[in-house]
Length: 341
Image (cartoon, rainbow, N blue to C red; front, side, top):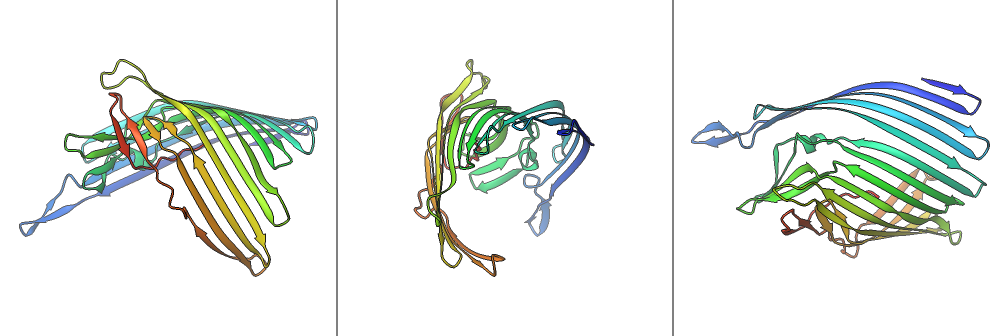
């Protein structure tokens, strides 16, 4: 439902209900002694059903010619049932969450733009993260889902300033509760289990500075961005430990791109990225560096495009991380973690 008011105001409300049902049914038999025998260790049936009921309302209005204000509120109730039929076990989750949003915009002139925002989000675990069946990576390691996962809840406050659509500065504070991540466990034989779990809390505070698509000449464009934030990770004591787990540090990230516009609709792009050491949950991720490049040609009045791209042409991307357990035991791993800033 939408309703305008006071010429520049808008009221929006709505409700939504959604149901998702996913079934993973794998049955395996092995040929033994001339017959087929069920393999219960390699068979699995997991049925997941999720109901989400939501209601939202938002109100926004232009205040004069320079100010914009928008307020919103969303409430969601979730009922989730995970039925691991193979082991005759069920997991039921019921939770209600409220998500407020605030946006304030100020445009003092055609060149300047200032935004202040507060947002809150929910990140529900995916089916693959919930499914408890073992997926073997190799003979000595496998991944395993966790039907008891809780959703992660994130809140962020950001202040950004933009000048002439090319230069921008942003300050941000973000906090995530019940961070969903994959943790490694080793048994006495050395077999590694990568298990999805709720880590604890993570926060980051810092800023970014960027220059976007700045025209140096008519045929050369330049983009550069830098991020520096302080990241903190904390988890409650576990496995008999008496102290809270802490893993804090500074994250730096720099990215650059050069675009060359050549005659006859040819384009060359070179991109580079460096990221310093990152504390993330129980992990400490080593620095990484990568260079990519590509050539693009447009045909038929820009209705067709031919692209040739090369990723990591120096072969420098090597994602290594160290896992620090509660008992101060460190494991060196080669594993990918997706980090969004």
